[in-house]
Length: 68
Image (tube, rainbow, N blue to C red; front, side, top):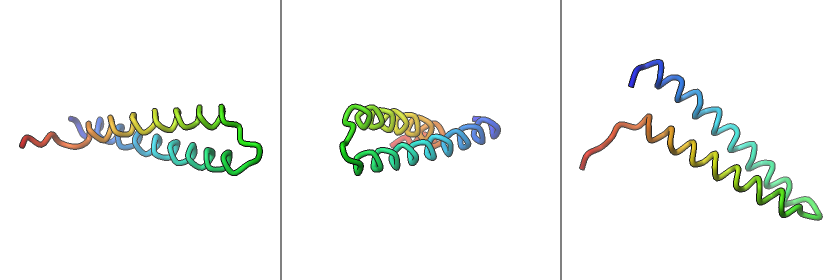
């Protein structure tokens, strides 16, 4: 992988991590409010999970393959 590609992936990884954190904060805020909007909370949880999947894909591209 070229150096520029790695830098782009690292920047994207940081962006996704920030989004993941923001969604997590929003979920916690939403769940502490009364009444709880369960549908909106569930949507945010799905979004958070999708972000986590994207983060893991990028992390696996940045980590070298280890052959056991």
